[in-house]
Length: 536
Image (cartoon, rainbow, N blue to C red; front, side, top):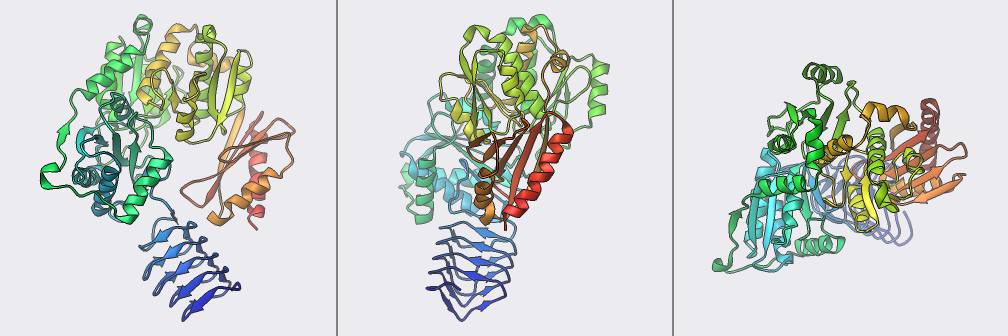
């Protein structure tokens, strides 16, 4: 117990640490937990083993923390932390609000969040809303919409629509903001609300903080009955989206190739629009998992089954589009799904071949992308820009007018001339266009390009030790170091090691990239051990 701390009528188990200025009143703190400087633990609070209460955080009376939980510095916890691993100081994380339906994301919370958002924008403005087909999203969106209407803001409901469709709708200039509600693509047990600015980008940090201040302070705008907002339904949103996609493609080149395409829609939203796009591009298409599923249960088909279907139908390429229609996977004519890192290399090479006339220009890729990117780009007069590993960082890169392509490591690709965000349907159609205009098919191109090997691990790491691990990683001997939202090391043998915090769980993400699979595995094993040591 540090000097200046106050512990009153409380029970502290063994190996509990209480920082200077912290105050604990009539509470129970289990073994190995840490109450950091200036934190406040009020009456009847129970804290499980190995918990961390950050500096200046407040635990309100009566709340309970299950074992292994973490409360961020400065956060105020007003409800028990049972299933969530961490309680953040703010509601938003990368323009998203996520949580367990009816536990964290309740109808009451959604209504209050809608009221806070409505209070942050002008009365009489229009907000676009959309959702995925799940019953959870329907429930949350109705509550959110009620909160928006109560502040005198009008609501235009796109109903069931994808995030790319919502972003395109917002670019029309008719809206002050947008909200999309969905089951989380990372964890289907979670609900997620994505909030957009008037131009379709994720809301900036300043706007997110303003909404949080209104929400926490309950400084809601209340309007008279005759000023309550109106609910309407956006017309021709889907048709407008399809026309924008087609206008950005070389339709004649695609039509000349007469592609036969197999698409696994993952029971998602692309099944409503992409068949029309393929038809108007002159493609013969076949669909798998094309029933939009409200329950969200749609396990991917096994690779041999998809390969057999491709061969039987005579298809040249197959796509898997994620349920939210943002990311893609690709199978070639030989029946091989390409890992997302390799797919980035292939798409990048096609883009470079077809954009020689625009050189010099820049290409942005995440810090975690393979060094294959630099090897492929070395033959062209282009500049490679490394950015953070999040989709937000990829979108931010498009603000640079020199950036003509942003390639992700999870199957997301951004073509700034069309949109500043990943769009799975456009990415698939654009890949068909590039294949139609190039002399290669994917299998031929794959054989010609340099190949490296990756290993990716999730290494357990307590929330409070993540910063210390990154500091120790920066001290590791290396030829080059890159610091963005993590650390990238270029080792003496030409291998790279990328290390960054997992944002939603108590883990570090470790990615190694080397000239051989065995070397990548050795580096992964070595650095996983080092991460454990650096936590001490």
